[in-house]
Length: 64
View 1 (spheres, rainbow, N blue to C red):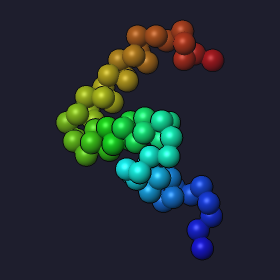
View 2 (cartoon, rainbow, N blue to C red):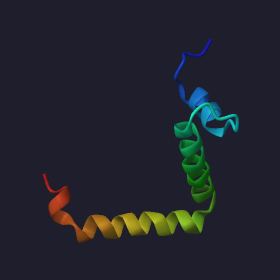
View 3 (cartoon, helix red, strand yellow):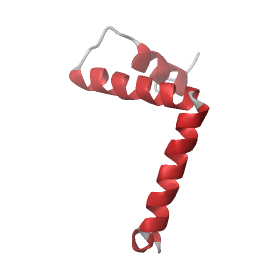
C-alpha cells in the first residue's frame, strides 16, 4: 500500500479533471504545461538555455 502524499498520488491528483479547489485547477494547468514542455526536447532545451542566461546575468543573486 502506497503512502498518502507519494508522487504517483500527486500525479493522479494533478491530472484529475474533477477539481476540488481553485488551487487544484491552477496546479493542473501548470502541471500540464510543464509536461508538454518536457515532452518537446527543443522547447525544453530553450527553457534550460534561458535559465542559464538568467543565472549568468545575475551573479550577485547566486553567489554565497
